[in-house]
Length: 282
Image 1 (cartoon, one colour):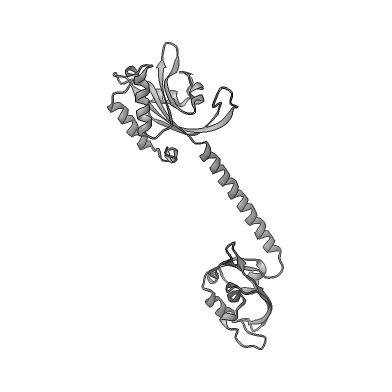
Image 2 (tube, rainbow, N blue to C red):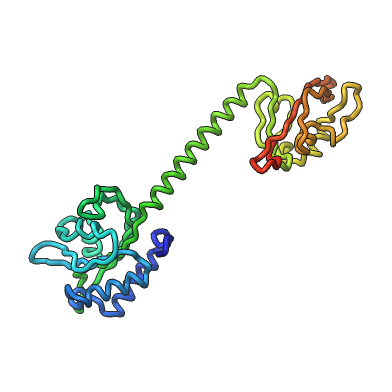
């Protein structure tokens, strides 16, 4: 089974299937309720890697579209479509019958029972419908190929839920950082700034472009000094030390400002380690 079939069956695929059926002269008049019908259906389903399929034939006098042949699972899907009124214009089968054009219905939601004693369950199917023409060129039947996409639908929903949860947690983290009165900066393992709260932005004074520059350039702009007024060596900068795995507590330093004032600060830094003990952030 090809799990990507529902996502990759394009309009050109449907056109190719239609051409295949027309070239093979398959029509409602060429099918019967016996082995020929199932053999043709099984071959087409095999070519397109579908796990279920059916052929619907118009019964004009009865005003119904009848299920002539069905293969695959879930078989309960077939039970739900044994007959379809020809005036039910919302039905994909009737749409194909009236328009003569292929149609693809993605992730159709159905309630089925997988067995006589089984409980009802919600499943999803992606189905491609293709018209079948009789020798006179009239569309009098439709072929359907289906694959169950229940697991894919549930996986997408779970990914959406996880995305919503991640966004919620990120918003909570941003709110917590903003509420801290002291400056707080988070760096990745390459010393890139990931987050700054408002206090840290005011202390560092970096523009958006400066935040993207290498750490050495940012450090040179700050001109951090020891309490005695000597330049603090690059390797002694708290961020650099934390990225080496050290924990720095209350390092006192000073930074001359362009306006002639001096900013004094007590700086602490610590590494944030991943499960494998490598440094990811500080």
